[in-house]
Length: 187
Image (cartoon, rainbow, N blue to C red):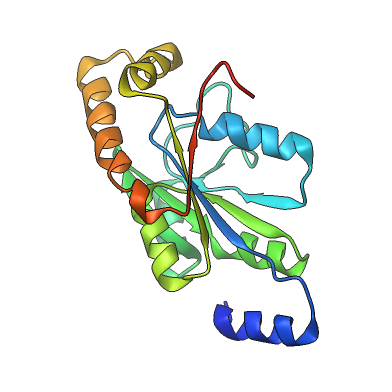
């Protein structure tokens, strides 16, 4: 990617709209995918970048819409070729944001929305300070636990690990520009 500050300056001088990089982070079970489905349905001229992952596909997920499901070998190759804006490990699987999708969105004049966890969000913000950061939080931890159980997380160790990680992620809210609390009974 070209230097974002230089691109922004050029666009402002030319009077053009500057596409934005937007990050959405949330603990597992907070409702990121539900929010993203609604944003896509509303067709806001916002490109949701599809994250690459090495984790297995869940039955309800669609390849290329929810995630790009890759083998660990393909993922490592893309990482080695510097094809990810950021990448991280979570729950034993790799996740990465493909640079090509962000470039394509910007070339069309669209904002690019990245669904990434707090570690990756910090990396993106450090490299691209103009990034708009949004944190999606559950109303409280008991509600988050209910959502995780409803999703099928039944292994007590896995549930405890996810809740502990959520507690850690919630401490990062101050690094975000916006906090959105996702209540199930509100639109």
